[in-house]
Length: 164
Image (cartoon, rainbow, N blue to C red; front, side):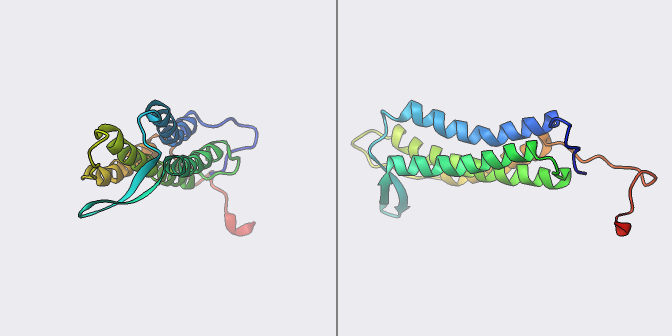
């Protein structure tokens, strides 16, 4: 059901939009806290022998923050969109929060592995990297639950769309 142009966003829509911004805030805050402990390059791929591919830290942090920001912008624009269907908007909130949480989880796994590893040791990637995707999916379900639910309109008030 589209929202009238003059009505403010539903409080649950604002809460869902904030939850889509939270992964971006997590990336930015963790980068600010860890930037002195991070090396100039981060491991981006691992194989059986250990790290196999590296990228500059600013590229990894910037690209992950940009992807999380895209999810945040979509969530915010959905909350303030005037013709947004509530059924469709719940799906938008859920999928954008899953994507934003997944990239934030990747950042936390990659940067967290380096921060928690002594400088002379080799960082290893364990199951916590895959666990971040499970947490991201659960986060999307939470956001889906927070987003406003569509209101069932009784048939006597429903309009016949075939005559338009």
